[in-house]
Length: 398
Image (cartoon, rainbow, N blue to C red; front, side):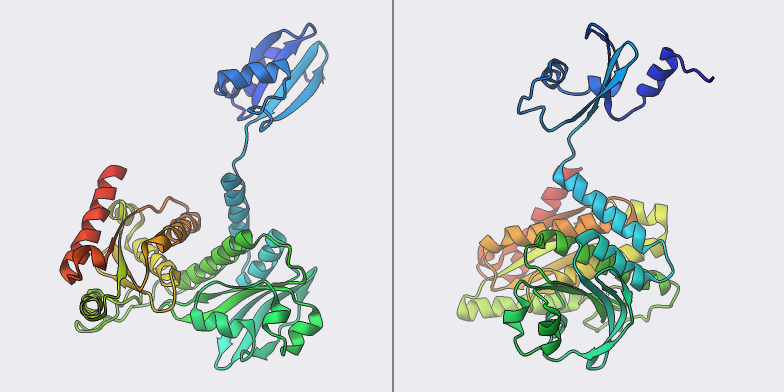
């Protein structure tokens, strides 16, 4: 019979991420590993004493009887964000593990959210062609439908994440939704190489008691994964050079520096005439040159394209994203006020975290914001103020 010595066990325990403590038959500690040592001293004392203090109830504590005592196995607390990121990473793994990315996406979203119906589609003129459809517990036959009068129509018009928490009330004339008992709808487009809408993901449920924030995270990430897949498939295609006077950046599909100058000049003139305020955000990717040098220019171009796709989804209709330099972007929000900035910042932070999951390494940036009214409507000073704040943040991050 194969036997393992206590020394061998302790050597194995030393590499475990869970805290492990060995106690003899008298309850005296005979061994603890490094993971247990790293816990706060007060938590260690309370865990050993078996008290249910507020600080220790976050841990998962298991007791394992031994021939001459017992072992305590202590799992440190997992933050909601860590748990959420683990779910999203699992979703990505499912999507990328098959050749049929559409079916895998529909199945992965269903498994993650538990919603009854999930579809991945593409747009064909005024029709929506379903490429994969998950119905309750299986993939079903594909189908097509007219987009007019559906929740998808409003989602396509806005090109942003769209949610209806009472489908029956919002679309009382849509017989198909009424017949299946649809209660909740969530949808988002995915884009092709030139940032044009190609199709969309939609999830429909027959209940309204769902985690809406989680649904947005999962569907947004899946949409980004589909967009990334299309970009990778066309990564070797030659990108047409935009004319020098064009308003569009050829790589990302965003408006370029020339149009950025035109827009802020027009907003400055509007401010002079009507005192209409506007916000500007200047965004610079941190350590992009190092990423480009280590991963290659193709990977660097892909990252810029993915960032551009995320920036286009931020804000409201009428808000505009620009690529104004190599890895420098700008967002302009006409009519916005300072109280709305926090949500925009959170949306941007969430998009950078999703990109980090997609490419497998951290995507970080520096952001500087300024209101047009802070510079009395001067377009040049407005840009300089936002740019200075961006560099100030970058200096404090390095």
